[in-house]
Image 1 (cartoon, one colour):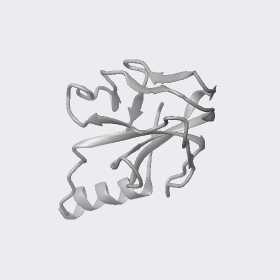
Image 2 (image 1 turned 135 degrees about the horizontal axis):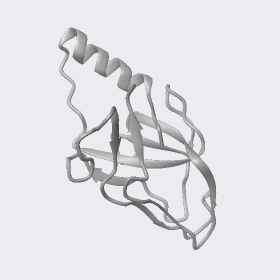
Image 3 (image 1 turned 45 degrees about the vertical axis):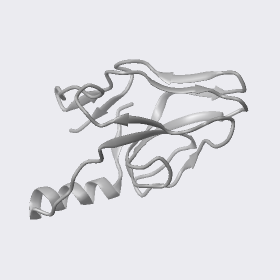
Image 4 (image 1 turned 60 degrees about the vertical axis):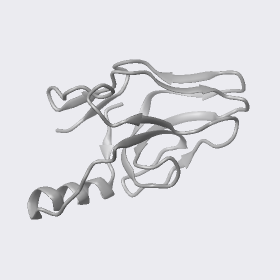
Length: 134
């Protein structure tokens, strides 16, 4: 998932780096699946129902080891579990700072879209997520 930064994150980082405004990364990040992709300003259509929930990961070096070549990968599986109803055609993923609502940080289309039906599971393998800065 080569990712794109949201406008929210761009503004926060620019203010932090160039004016010294305090910004602290979230202690936990949340992964979301979308049936209509978000944009830099947010939006999109997040999956709902059928036992879907955002996946939380503590924002630390165990889950996200040191970046290399302007890229960061996941070191643990991101497991959304098993759908108990159809989730639809998953076209994108986002990283947010809250379990619901919140601010979109990064987002990207999936390399391969996938329809998740009742009884299907969805997960991202170790090193299956790559967020880049370049």
